Length: 267
Image 1 (cartoon, helix red, strand yellow):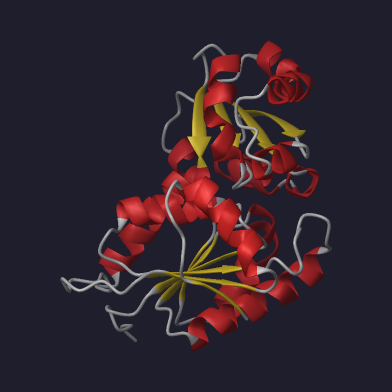
Image 2: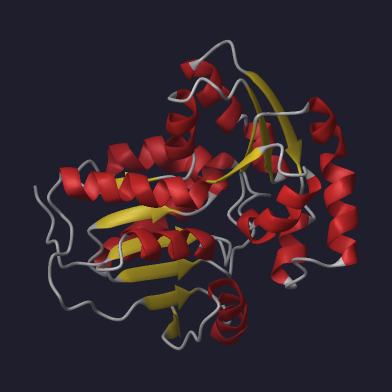
């Protein structure tokens, strides 16, 4: 079944971190209208069991499909690790894209990256979603991983270049820097807001991978394959929905997106 190409793309996350993916999707697909759903009443997903995260993800996909979404992007590493396979089975006619496989596919196609570092929330790192996906594709890869839980509150406070952020980066990443990786995956959708300070910390010696960038390009490829791109000159206004306080989300969203955000509703 070919979806209506004029319908919007749905994107969901447990909170605001997925807005970094939203931003990349907007860059890659400027003719598409987007619906963002932040499940802010149940954030964070990173401390929940896989079964609970899958249950929440199912609810989110159903909500986005009820709003007419022609495709759904899971802009959350925890939900991508826990729920993508299940959601693909439940919604076989829906294009569902997670944030893990697109960057893994790229790295596996480029054998110059032999030592790969993964940073994320403790739950994402413990799930070994990135590590296992990379190893399945190439058993010879050397992978190091580190949970960096304090990065999320630092980002949500807007502390992208502060002294406390520099100290936290050093605390978490000094061991990885000694390992001298070829590539570093930002395995949390909040972390692209710290990409610059992390790059500086490594002195430009490591290629840093923002999963949102590759997710957006994977989505564009799938839409083209399904002939589902919006070819209309008319693009509907993007919409934002949250399950808790809309004003709080709006303030943080403007920080992430660097623009005014007005179309926010609580559901």
